Image 1 (cartoon, helix red, strand yellow):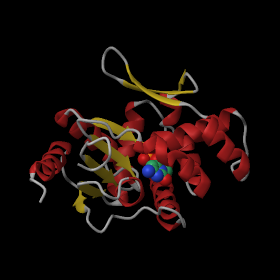
Image 2 (cartoon, helix red, strand yellow):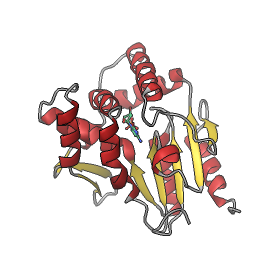
Image 3 (cartoon, protein in one colour):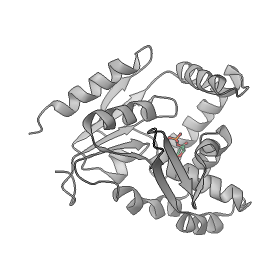
Image 4 (cartoon, rainbow, N blue to C red):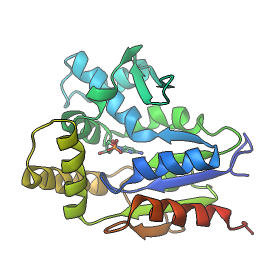
Length: 228
Ligand code: DC
């Protein structure tokens, strides 16, 4: 077992748009395990900081905001996941490009990351946890039994995001999204603390051109292999 709570952990890391969220949620559902969307925690802090009109360069205020921000994950009776930030349903605001870019900037502050570490580890409860993020397999759950790193070409990730946003009626251009994705990848991969990179023992899966079900099957197969 991977932690004191006696639960196995599957970490799924990767850049934005690699399919982590979709795959992690589906795999957690199939396994009946808990699910941690760690990006939502960083996004929640970014949204709370926006509500408080904090300056993204004011690190002290951002660290204080991280400690003060309450985040709760709830499913609607229809099973739709919602995220409450300080008691307010902020699910839609969390998913915006603005929140993602602010989260990426805030996530580069070491004290913000350490303030969220224990909160993330607390998600590990029986019967198991699927943890989705950038540093799940490297920093938060380095002892996890199962580690996956998902990638996809930047062009395909921009296409996926374009489709998602278009379906929601948001007007964006592929070129603009591609630029944002490349900038966010660079920021997430080049920061000094917990940069985006695969754990040495992670299994790499390139999802470019793969259907969601094929990726889910591949990940489930990995978890089904008995650990030595
Ligand atoms: O996975 P996401 O797009 O919701 O994450 C938003 C930002 O939060 C991402 O650009 C970097 C940051 N993040 C992080 O630094 N570490 C994590 N474990 C998850 C997200």
